[in-house]
Length: 102
Image (tube, rainbow, N blue to C red):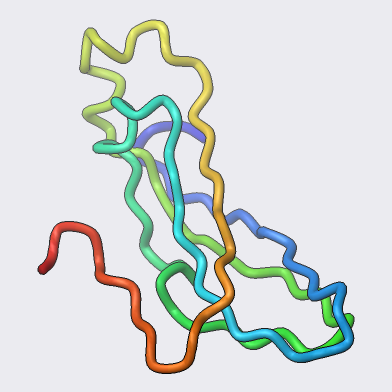
């Protein structure tokens, strides 16, 4: 991905059980210092997702890397940014706080 250009990626999720699952995904950017330059335009994270038994879905993430990434001397040796997700089963009545908000 070239800094400043938008990109679309898909993450595959599968419910291998015989029961429906409702879950919430959180994300992580590695290296941590590059996270300030990673901008999600549209994402499935922090929203409940329902997966039926044995269902497999592709979940889209529309994003870009801020062009200032290329100007930051601390990012000069960063050639790879990894975006990962963790899918947590939601508990009834439970909500995850949005980062930076209390």
